[in-house]
Structure formats: C-alpha cells, structure tokens
Image 1: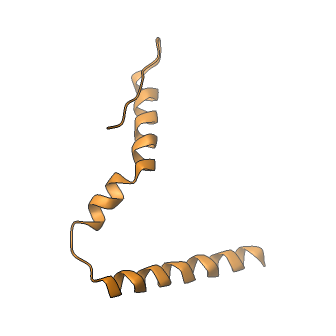
Image 2 (image 1 turned 30 degrees about the horizontal axis):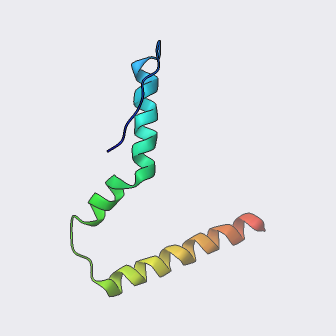
Length: 64
C-alpha cells in the first residue's frame, strides 16, 4: 500500500501529485494492463527484442 504523509499547510494538489508519482513508479498500472489478457511466452520474448532494437536505434541516432 502506498502511504503519503501530508505535511502541515500542504495543499491537496501537491500531495496528490506526490501520490501519483509514487504510484507510477511502483508499476502497478502497467502490470494490471499486462495481465488483462494472456500473451504467449514466445510473443513476449519477441516484443522485448523489438523494443530493445527500437531503443538501440534511437540511441544511435541521438549519438550521431
């Protein structure tokens, strides 16, 4: 469970922003979306390779 301590005289907006950032870092929403449907292990491996190739391509373009 995510716990956010609201400081004295702190606005709700700032506390909510801290909560959202902490929630995003935990990766809960990403996991829920991944579990919403079954994906074969071979498809998962293929997607990981495709994403890695894309990241590498972007990094090489950035360095040029």
